Length: 278
Image (cartoon, rainbow, N blue to C red; front, side, top):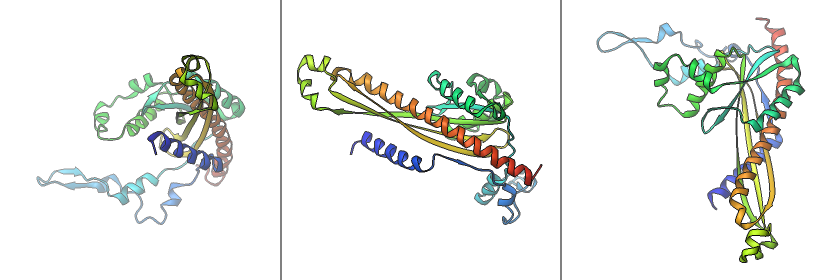
């Protein structure tokens, strides 16, 4: 099986799974989660040890301590809110594509002002907000995604956003022959007869994060598709076009899932606020 076939198999599986559950929400308490955890998160003062020369040094966290630290966050989002919109392309923060803008505007309109507003996270602001080059240099050994998420949260903080919706999308395409493909053996057929079926499949996913403490409020996933006929001589550009169209279709569906996720989240967060007004 070719690599392209493997990718289409994966996309088909994603499509099947996302048809069952297209979004999820989270409003659980870190304090409650850690009630049974021995000692809870390790205080910073307890992490200092002595080196061979007797100097105080900060020891690395154990896996257990990392788990406790990761869990120790609380939901604090309240609507209406300023929600950042951050697009990841090739592993880094990029401007929201113009073709996606209308879909996100539609989602914001359907949600209404009681939810607040979507604000694009600017890559330029991300560069300005990174005022700690030493910390940035310490991330060089980490993944591009880890660096991108750090940049997104810094830019979102500089733009005074409450939460940020981070999303990405991609598309693939394949070329199938139709009964008319027999005419591709002629020069006229290759140039004039739309004998090739170009099919595209797209995928998009998003997560909603709290800017200040990194709490994950929810995630959504969507798939899209696009198809057209093309002449043999034009299949290269047609495949690219179909892949892009399928990805855009997935983003449009994603915006609908995000809107539904936000509606459920608003209700669940209101219930949390009644139990814990703080």
